[in-house]
Image (cartoon, rainbow, N blue to C red):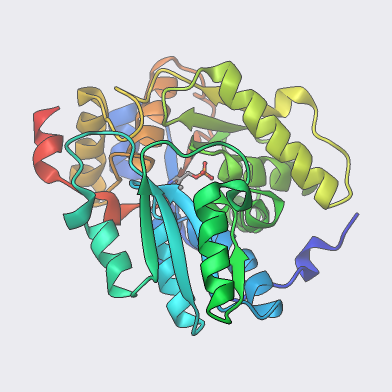
Length: 332
Ligand SMILES: *Cc1c(COP(=O)(O)O)cnc(C)c1O
C-alpha cells in the first residue's frame, strides 16, 4: 500500500476540526448526536480538504492558470478562485446553472466572493456534460487561449472529485478516530453530492480498521442505487490509487428521500430541522448540502436506526456562503 500520509499537500488544513457533543439538539432528536465541524475549516467547507492536495499538484507542475467546473450552488469554484489568488495564479471556471430558479447567482455571496478574486473567466453553462473537465469543449477553448497567451493551464477535476481530492477525507477519517477514541458512534452521516467526501471517509475508516459505517444523504434527488454505484466506483478509484484492497460492496451506503425538490431545493421539514439546530446550538447549516445531511440524520434517528450509546456523528461540510437567498427559505 502507498504511504498515504506522505502524499504531499499544500498545508491549508493546519489542525483537526472539532468534534462536538450536541447536548440540547440530541434531546430534540431523541438520539445522541455529535458534529464534526468541517464548517470551521479555512474558507468554510469540505472543498479545502480536497484542494489541499489538488493545488499541491498544480503548484508542482508550475501551472499559472487553473481551469475547473462546478455548479452554481457549490463552494468549489469560489474556493478555487480564492486559492488560485493565494498561490499567485489565476483561474477560469465553468459554472453550471442548476437548482432553484430563484437563485440569482450574480448577486449571491458565493459568486460575489469569487468575483472579488478576479478570475479570468466565468463561463456559465446550463448543462454540464459528464466526464473529465479537460474533455469539455469550453474547457479546451479556455486552455487554448491560456496557452496562446504564453501561460500554463492546469485542469482541476469537477468539484474536486477523483482519488487525490478524496484523500482529503481519508485524513478527516483519521481525525475522527482519534477524537472519538473508545467512544465510536453507530454511524457517520454526511451529504452526498458528487460523493468524493463520502468515498474518502468510507475508505479512510476501513483503511484504519474501523468498522463504523458512513451513510451518505443524497442532495440531488438521485436514487439510492445511482448514488451507491457512483460512490462505489470512487472508492474503487481511491483504493486503486492507494494500492490497497477494494472495499466490500456493503461498505457503501446511501439514503435517498431527503433532497426535497432536488438540488438546491430544501423541503419545509429540512428547514425546520435547520432551525432546530440553529436555535438549540447556534450552528447554521446550508440549504443545499449540510442542511440535507442534517435532515437525513433526523430521519434515520426517528426510524430508530442508531439508538446505541455512540449515537450519530454528523459531518458538517460547511457551505455557509450558500445562504443565497433568505427569502426563498422563508417560502418553503
Ligand atoms: C461540494 C459540497 C458537498 C458535497 O461534497 P461531495 O464530495 O461532492 O459529495 C457538501 N457540502 C458542501 C458545503 C459542499 O460545498
